[in-house]
Length: 523
Image 1 (cartoon, helix red, strand yellow):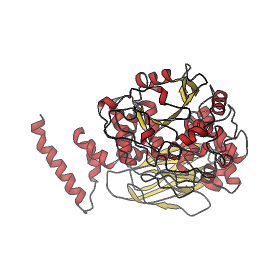
Image 2 (cartoon, one colour):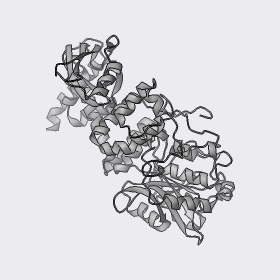
Image 3 (cartoon, one colour):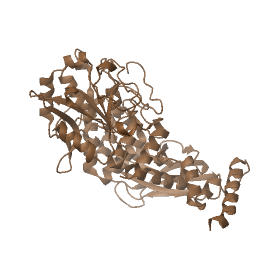
Image 4 (spheres, helix red, strand yellow):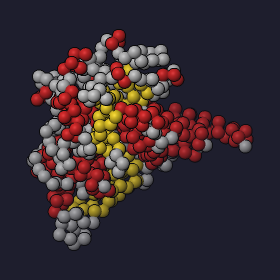
């Protein structure tokens, strides 16, 4: 069967190559034929054209009653415009509206454009295959607030630039990132290699698990962790991409007065399945990571420099750890350590408009989740209480500000949320460092909730003399890292490790755009 079909396959591929190279106007685009080829041929080609990032729509503009029609070039139709008309076909108090979308000049007869339409109160979508004027009806606004918002700001329009085939292919690329399979692991690796330029060099097998003697681990030593499969692997992959961090989780070591070694961690799952802050015996934590963590964790120990170890107030660190033990993981400010600027933290096509739209979707699907992830934090930035996301967006407009400005307001370490102080994995550690005196004498001007994991491992707090690293550090590995990788098949890389002295208001206004993640001095 394979032999008899091979001439047709070769012919089809040859035709696609010729058509792709041709500048002749065609009734179809070569990409539109790719799904018709056998899977083992079409998917590698589609994969080269599309990626998981193609799931992210691009903000086109807002169609409103106050300005001329918004115009743009689409992925399929090259001449498009949209305008909004308010009406009261429903006979309701605030009426509804009609969004007009005129599409023209398709590049082929077989393509289509997919659009998402958003207000703070709703998200809907449509797709267009034929050149003509289309309409999207909003039968009734959800009260005065949506009516006033739409009257002033209009309806936001987003384009799925990858089209139907590309979007479906991107969905297929995203799905495995979160699967606990070899396919999922390979997908996470491929994503990070493609979008961050990360390397995954295999270590010699004897070095995959280090035979540790814990007497050379000290209070304050950090553990950088990278997971590459399953739910946490997929989440960390996206976190790494937007923040530039080459690790997705962290923990910290502490010794008690009896010399027993413990691990403090924000994001430890308790018996109820909740992610909380926990202080665990080293043996329990280390055994779990080696034998029960199915996310294939890679772990590096980052020992403190002797000068900072001498400065580290262990008593104060323990007081802080005990005060936080059992409290919820810091979801409230998780995304705000990443967003520091109006536009310099969003990998294209991400932007503040898209962030607001994603928040709107999640607020409809999971209102409790939304309240935990951003509603309280947005209220903190506005100095308000109890506003949900639509009310927050309306309040921002009333003040003559913008949502991108609101997102960039620095988090404050002394903000208290409904469930207490909010600390992510790295904020928990750096707040401990702050309490233990490592940021003195500038600790009052440091907001650790503004630090990403990358910002943390770049701090010049760690050992810089390889001869003082533990004797078992990087044992059996033919590459000697400046830190001690203690678990994992692939060699961990931490670009910029141990290079940056702390300074006042550190990391409050730093961009983080891939793949270089360049940052200006003292941002």
